[in-house]
Length: 262
Image (cartoon, rainbow, N blue to C red):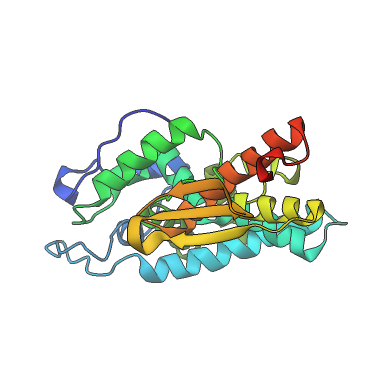
């Protein structure tokens, strides 16, 4: 998953979409659906008559995926509370999880687009995955286009199978494997920090400097305990700050009762 990536800008330079069929183990009866599933809104190459972007298929695939994951977890975890089921579903279908699926299968090589920023964003993801081999829980800002393509491909399979839930799910399950089980689910850094502080009976303050310099700072009293910087997305900066703040609390609490507040 850490191999170098090549992002193609036009269909003429990209590998054949037939390779996608090999990857997912499904042969499309309607090849136009497959082409549509990999056509971004930025694509202006209409010479082949494919003018539709993947947005409608993405909408359908998103709905299908959320339903099937919810159904699987409902029966897999009969005693799980609704809130926990929601957390588990989100961990398996959020933008980062699906972007990782697209990256793992090399779907980025087949996208028909003219987005000059996509190459850099995928390269950033490549480097981030080296640091976070598993789901980063909010520390990576994954390209949404990669998640979109996974959902649009799911929608395309669903339509091509004449709306067969079972046939589509067989393809989708293999594409998504391995799914994250409850036992390996980690909390979002902000949630983990807030819950820890609540148990300890302390209150932290988030200082928003994101507009000015892309930073979020976290204070306990007048002491800075965490700083996160990421100019492209505020929530990512917030999560980075929460990780540092949590680690600071753990480190100091292991030595004494908050000696850094004195």
